[in-house]
Amino acid sequence: MEATAAPFSSIVPSAQSLSSIRASSPNSSFLFRKNIGNANLKFKSPRSLSVRSSSNSDSVVTLLDYGAGNVRSIRNALRHLGFSIKDVQTPGDILSADRLIFPGVGAFSPAMDVLNKTGMAEALCKYIENDRPFLGICLGLQLLFESSEENGLVKGLGVIPGVVGRFDSSAGIQVPHIGWNALQVRKDSEILDDVGSQHVYFVHSYRAIPSNENKEWISSTCDYGESFISSIRRGNVHAVQFHPEKSGEVGLSVLRRFLDPKSQHRQKPMERKASKLAKRVIACLDVRTNDKGDLVVTKGDQYDVREQSNENEVRNLGKPVDLAGQYYKDGADEISFLNITGFRDFPLGDLPMIQVLRYTSENVFVPLTVGGGIRDFTDASGRYYSSLEVAAEYFRSGADKISIGSDAVYAAEEFMKSGVKTGKSSLEQISRVYGNQAVVVSIDPRRVYVNHPDDVPYKVIRLTNPGPNGEEYAWYQCTVSGGREGRPIGAYELAKAVEELGAGEILLNCIDCDGQGKGFDIDLVKLISDSVGIPVIASSGAGIPQHFSDVFEKTNASAALAAGIFHRKEVPIQSVKVHLLEKGIEVRI
Ligand code: 1PR
Image (cartoon, rainbow, N blue to C red; front, top):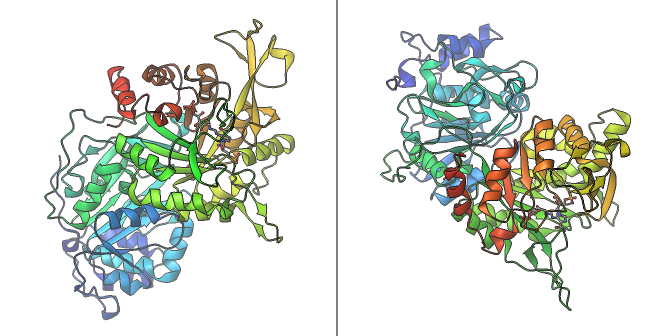
């Protein structure tokens, strides 16, 4: 490990140098960065930018939320840790902060636009140069660099040398980098003290890479096809590429250590050391309103969620918020809510679902996905709501990702017919604004057996287990409206099309396997996970822990999702993870 770097304040120019450099050069951020290494610079701060020593209480943290996306999770985590939040309204609020958290969300260029236009950029540089307690998260780390290639080459704050670039998918990795990965801690950084051997949660397509010029800043790196910068630290200035607010208890400890450096709280040391991207185990809650009007977790057999009794009621397996909380405690790496009748209703009219998200996100600190009914919608009074508004409400309510089913099928069909990306589909709009890592496409295919590969104009696979009449081949027909309607597009064609249109991940169900407990459809999962460059979540059919190791050993799935076995308490999440570890498959524990 390298020694801890000198405090930032002892080696950086002050605001006056910054101001004069800026006045004389349009490329001021860059010059500012270049001068950071000159320990002999001595300047005085102009009064307008002076940093006030604070009299705020120890339990207040200042949050820079420039309104670009979901910062509810970080708010919830801070409140959970007993801190109250002061929102930055003016650049002065940054300068007078006792401790500042900058949870960058959205894309690089719009973020820099806002920071520059509001004067926040200069205040941030000033705050950092004075070595005030700072924690940047995700984009909040990337914006510290000279520039990013995310939206063309766009200048950043210029505090740290280097250009933020996209992961190179030609190296055989799936991009975005989504999931729980390991850190290689390079130097002492108290906020990482509990992380050492544990996985933390990443979700991003762009990254900064280590160089001679920025090595003084690096506190940890992470491997994903290459080594990239996962955290920086200089004096009181910290930033992390991962999401502490979504990294379970270990993530909360990162925040706690930043907010309260004297904290004695220690995580239990782990027996196993995290070394790479872990395979994820996801708990899925299919949610709908039952006949009494209550929102319940339900579960179907091949998508039929009604009891086989005279009453024919919707199967009720529990309350969504309670079950999600339980699965978080049990070690689920992610939780998905699918509003399975969302295609009928207007999602923003579905206040219970929004409440479920709000309550769940208060106590669950792993990623939450929500799906069902996301599309453009015109209500009874003729008011039009774009899918972006729907997604925005879900993000505001605590979702980290949204999942699109039916509407993605229509968009893919259109795209395949015309070959034109209109940019108007819900998938395209939401991924453009929130990033493709925030958009999952849920595919609901049904197996259609054929005798010969040329029988249909869709991608056909040779089956491991022949069909009921000895058919050796099948294609997977996509459906909409919860499996009620088959469409003229296969799962393979859909997956390729939605990747093009901006999906960041695929949730791959299989109606034939759903609720059967006989294992995932390995043929299907292999076909899709070998064909796209984005992560694939295998879903439908898990019955025993071995089904999880099968799907990870035989396919390129990044995650495996199950519902029934967890709801019925047949297999605890931890048993799945223990089994995977025994099989040599890395998971988060
Ligand atoms: O089309 O955008 O409104 O989205 C609707 C969403 O609801 C889609 O993601 C679709 O998969 C889901 N959905 C619709 N109807 C049903 C149903 O069951 N009747 N549930 C449904 C799909 C599938 C899985 C399930 C796994 C694992 N559920 O998510 O949880 O198959 O189950 P298992 O482990 O018990 O086998 P839109």
